[in-house]
Length: 462
Image (tube, rainbow, N blue to C red):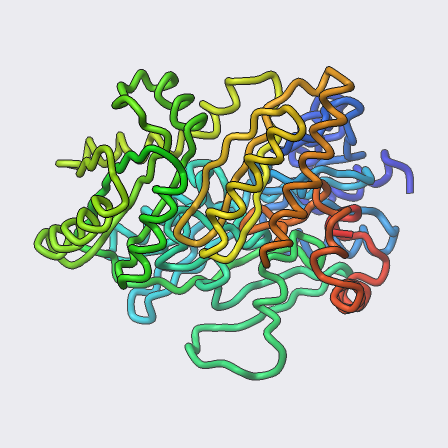
């Protein structure tokens, strides 16, 4: 089918204004938030923006009949190239499907279309005293459909888990256009295979998510934020380890090393005490101020035993927002230190966190690179950032070897390739090493069963 004919057919489904095939428009849908090069841009042949699940179904049926690749796309905030149309074809943008369809207070669940921003969904639930905990750093612009497709995590995973822990059901359009409903509002449901879990984190390779049913929990009535400074990462990691061992489970425990701390201090014009080489930002929540005060007191005791240099408790919402702004702005502050930043995402057992940080430090020295580390210390999810100039061929070669070594370090301590960003394009070469041949064959059998023509997000994961 020619591109012109394809565009005409798609316009009959979604309307003339929602099919884009101009050169500039197609370039706008050729990249995401990963570090993949923009040139040459893998442009889609055409962009289609359906409004309903039925339109998505008709688009997929058309693509299936013609064997045309389809790349689903939300806000393109992914870090591994998941929404890059590597093989051309159709870029299926879900940004017009933005309705929160129901907040079911009785069952404590929310139903939403995939294009709803994560923060908007959170706020809509919070207005009714209900809490949707997953909060990826990109929540101001990432969409709930993308969060489900990537099984996104966030700051509060240490206490509340990741996106998968809240997905109760999905509406999915399969490769041939079939509409599939999975799960439901029944809390206990063990009927057949767990299809909801299968599609969650499948990165758009098994189906297109067109509706999401999420469970909610009561909104904590009180929340407090703390900033703790230490001399080095070992001391900061020791705090998190001892805190959890003591039964203190904060809603978030974020850590940053000396390079990250200095970068964010310059970015936000913060003054730091002499000798500060590690920062831990902790959020606690509970029923009332007295409960928060008790938790803070216990954390202070553990922190002092770990050599804490500064212990700061936010006194009001403005100070809490300021402390969180430090963490949420960290990626941009670190990125400003070099022409290029390859932000990686690995996850390790919690007790291996200090060891893998030391290994990454050794990797930085071995390859003569600057690799600051920050992440979610409470759940073992690290984000090492390789700072470099990829225009320098010699440096680029060292960068690729360093990234290989970082993944090897994660796997060596019992970790995995990704805690929340998925595999996409950038981590494909390491998949067999992480899953083993039997694991890869099993996943490929699932893929072949659901997408026999291989048209759904080709070039991702595999």
